[in-house]
Length: 505
Image (cartoon, rainbow, N blue to C red; front, side):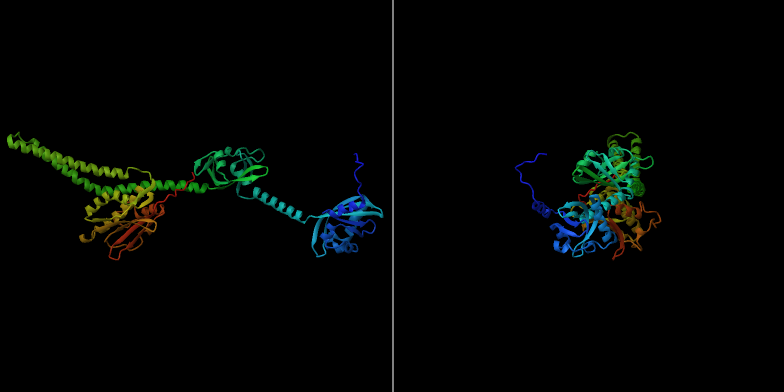
């Protein structure tokens, strides 16, 4: 290396100035006695002693009292530097105020004008040890998370490739940890809000977090996982953390409940048809019998000997009257059958927003048929405006029929002047309300606590089934005695609002 002859040479004072400016702590010991000869400002600041105060100090005065920092060990370390030229150690100094300072120190033999010496350079590593301890703990936590937790955790890149998976995740995915894990979509189908989705769509929705589902195909039962996908920003690139939980039990319960609801739906309609058939059979008997009588009379007029003049005209009028009257009675019977078919024609349940008043109106035809046969007057108090509720329209109507039919059957044994049933529609407290009042004997106990009817001839779909239909729609159903005699049955349903929630599956 060439030295510029014009550059000034450094003198002793320059080296002293540089050591004084250094933040590395420096102590100079005599090679023979190990006494302190000099200290730079950084060392004085850390140890809280001046140079003159440091010179007479011995190892016990400025080192930790722990056995591994004994004076003999310290002198041996300094002598090792004298003999070998350099050596290093982790040493705990003690400041004037008593603070123990962990340091990383290196001792180097230097030749001074007055003889050999040992220059010790050291620095405070307390914060580094704390960081190291935190890193060890973090590593321990990560090891526990990866190998000992039941959490299903996955790390992915922006392309959907799996970069890390906990042991639980590897097991449930059926993945081999020995080789590359590959894309997530290799193991199952992604879903968003219960519908099939692609990795790209899921990735775009993670801004920075989105809910996600993963359906895994299995020979026995499918496995359903649900959780969150969070986008993480890292210096090395973009990564995503997916935390999932096994919700197979919940989904299977939903499927079981759906089948149960379908069975309830079928049973409700089956029994409702039986109840209505009892009332309609009587109603159909009248028009069909009348039609038969009218046709019989028309046949007799058609079979009389031919007449002339006014007699012929009278016979023709009787014939036309009989046929027209029979046709009207048959049309009436057809209307009854059509109404029944329209009410029970659909076997599936559909939840929608409907006016509770419309549900009652659809039921009134059948209610009045049965009430008329029992001599019961039906009084309806309608709400001045719509009462929109979210419900299964036909099943809710069957609850109305059940409550009304029970009230009619109850009053059939009462005096004629007490055979009055009052139906009321209202809205209060965020709920639509329908009540059925009768003047019968009054309920003696909670009928909804009994799984079966106590009536002699049955009660259609049953109060227990009515309760399940209403409560699963987040409503209430009750029965109580009226002060003026009789009973009041009623139910409520929440007034409709736009809060449809997505379903998984």
